[in-house]
Image 1: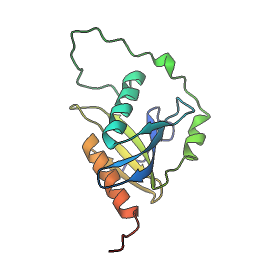
Image 2: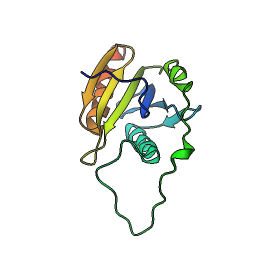
Image 3: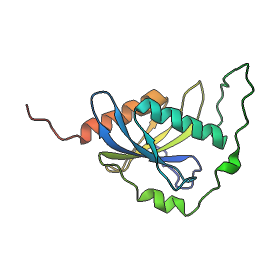
Length: 149
């Protein structure tokens, strides 16, 4: 397993606050903003993180969407690197679980990278955004208290 580098420009800290049979929700943080970004479903999380990566220009996708409309070029100046944000990110935790996601590649129209489950100190590689969501969902199932019947 490859360890996640704290200095990676595209680290995202995902704080899961609620989970149910349909999915999970919470907030995520990155080093380019002082405010959390809310997500309501796993799909919403993936879409918002993908937008962040597009704006950063990293990791670059190997597949470009085609359109008849001209798309504005990403403006990386919108995201000034905040070095003091690295330590501030570590203070953020989810009510149910906390994950640090490092997307290293965006190949074959999906993501490849590493996810670190902070509460269990476990790191796992993933080969797609779907696999990432399944890993996070599985971790949430493990950390959920047993339901009495």
